[in-house]
Length: 160
Image (cartoon, rainbow, N blue to C red; front, top):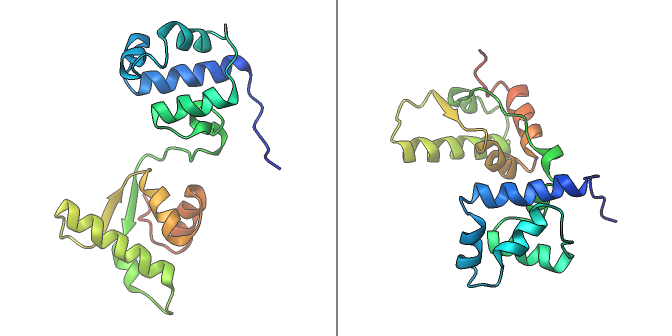
């Protein structure tokens, strides 16, 4: 069974408009870039709640915008990780492997890769972005919020 967060039609319409704007597109741009598949007046009608959007059309529109369907419909806003001011990974702490903890090794490899890409050879601490928590979560099989807590519980984050 799929549980869908309760959203009003107005919130869904606002989410659809938000995705279009985030893509930097006007209604006319949508029509032009879709080769007329999506008419400006129709998209505008969806965004104003003047026209019903079928599931099939929602899927096609999400594919056109190249976003997940839940993003297009604003259904994922409750599961977003809160924005944190600054996250600093203490790379030195990854050297304290007391066991063969594969997650810790994955974090060390992740940090090494980021340092190499940034050409930052300090090797002691690494500022990471909030979006990096998603990648870290994938490495340790956790969601973003749990990944942050996991890093903190293992003293891998530099405390302010």
